Structures are given as structure tokens and as C-alpha cells.
Length: 268
Image (tube, rainbow, N blue to C red):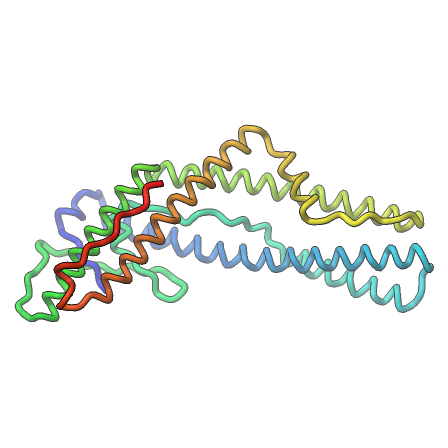
């Protein structure tokens, strides 16, 4: 549903169309990035399973000695691990970008992408036809909903500061990923050394690796990440509430459009 933007609202921006397009580009980049995150996570799970299989085979070889079937299974597990590792992009999840509520109102999802969908008007027209009057009422409610969403989010953090914090959070996650990779390489190297020496190869779980990764975080990064993640939960609750109210507005009819009131945004 195309959103009607008052000319006076758009005039607050130096270049409103450019601001909207920039926001769409950021949202689409984030959507593509999150697809890469999903692919990375899937490959990481496969990699972990292959590493675990290699450990089991190495332990078996240490107990009974080398055999053709053991060597074949080891080669298959190693190939799985290498293939999975090649698909691990290192992408880490980060929050979707935010924008001024008027800019956000001019954008809508279209499948797995975001598109610009607004019209600049001098006034919100009052149409005589019932169907057009209903649409006008929905547009008014959507604009008010967008304003409330922006004000509620803005009381927690401004869009500019949020985007800066999100950038900083991605740096923390990237540092985590670097430590995780180094720890995993060290674990595999040590286990291979033990297997070759005919000694028992201990199993290292993902939880143990993650514990070491977190232990490598600085106190400053720990505090920042905790604060950021708590803030993210609050903003996600607000965003979800806005989507729920948006869906209710779309379902309004001529019978209830003028009596319907949105539920208040969560503030805690």
C-alpha cells in the first residue's frame, strides 16, 4: 500500500528521495548479508560434524591401527570438513539499520527485498467514496503509527547512534570469529598430534570452544555487547509491535476504521 507523505514532511530532508533510496539500499544489503549468515551457520554446523567424525575415526585408528575402511572413512570426513570450511564466509549477524520514521514509512517489503513506495502530496485528500475514505483513514493511521514507532525507538537511541553501535558490534563479532578460528585450528592440530602418537584424543565440544572465545573478549567488549544486545531486544519488541499494528490497520473496514486505536508501544 503506497504511503502518502506530506510535502511539508518531506521538506524536512535535504533530499528526501535520496534518503529513502539510501535506506532501501541499506535494508537490502542487510537482507543479503543475513542470507550469507544463514549459509555460514549451516556450513559451520556441517564443519563441526565433520570434525567430530574425524575425531571418532582417529580414536578408532589409534585403538585398532590403520585399515583400508578406516582410511576411506577418514578421507570422506576430511573432504566433508574441507568442503564445509570453503563455504564458511565468516559473516556475522547484525541488526537491521534504522531510519527516521518518515523515511521508514516510505519503504515496504516486497518478497525478500525492500522497495520504495510513497507519494508526495500537498494534503491528504478527503475522498467522497467510502472505499477511498477508508484508504485515507488507513494512511493517517499508518503515518501516526510510524511517528509513534520513531519516537519510542528514539527514546532508547537515535538512528545515527544505533547504526554506529551496530558497526561497533560487528567489530566485536568479527574479533570473536578470528579467535574462534584460531582456537579451532589449535584444537584440530593438537588432536591430530595425539592421534598420530597413538594417545587418547579428547573430544572438544562447541560449548567449550565458545567459552574460550568469550574468555578472550575484553571487559570493554563484554560490557558493550551486553548493553547492545539488551538494547536490540527492546528495539525488536518495538519493531514487532509496529508490524502487528500495521497488519491490524490493513484489516480495518469501514465499520471500525474510525474507532480503532493502536495498542501502546512497549517501553520496557
